[in-house]
Image (cartoon, rainbow, N blue to C red; front, side, top):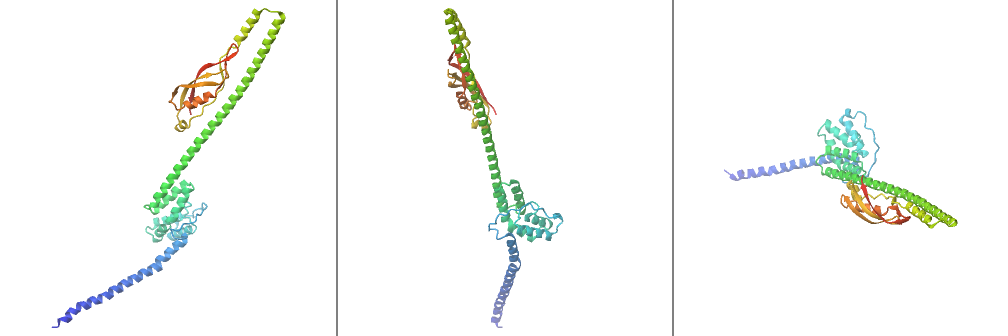
Length: 342
């Protein structure tokens, strides 16, 4: 028996298998290439042409009016919804306006037919454009619109990391706006307090000027009356005792206490204003013969040192009609409590 033929038979069999395997692989490769060019590539090109380019390519900002949603959206079939979605993509209405945008139409398609390949692919391909639209809404401080758009994006791809970035930006912009509004409110309040203080200072200055004018007129009148009295006594030869008695009476009539004629409202400290703190300060000071204050000192305060400087600065600008003794202005010491409240 010739065993050589038996040994060569398996070798010939193995050699015949290789061409078959190669042929099968080649067929699958041709099918894959054909599917790519005939199905996948045209679909991607359609999505790209609708959306304006590749997702990595920046899209020009488009501003859309609040277009009304098509009538009876809930009653549309899948083809109608896909048509509306494609139209929205062509007009770059990815997430807005509400009820008439590509994402809402595609999501309705998936509600009617879960796993619809066209809607799923379109949502994935247009996600970067839609995320850019949401970011623009955040930057323009349309916070309610941005929140709605982020929620739509989350329905399409809840695990996408871009959502975390968008939510962080939205939160940061909201906090920044709140801070700016608070600063504007505090600034307006400070301006109102400054305006009220200026008005009070002007009123007190006008009052002081009027009182000084009246005081000078009374002093001039008293001087003229005294001169006339002395002339009359000299002319009639009245005794010196009567003249001295009249002078003493006139002197006693000119004894008086110091009178505040210009009270300056203290400036509310910024730290106390921001913390919304209230308090009081008791201040001791000397009223000089010229009506000005000196030796201003804090006797007591609550809370300690928060309002001290504002209180002493205000008292230093007080103006008084000085105390009079025998017709002569003299120094006196006074004390006053100044309250601070919002």
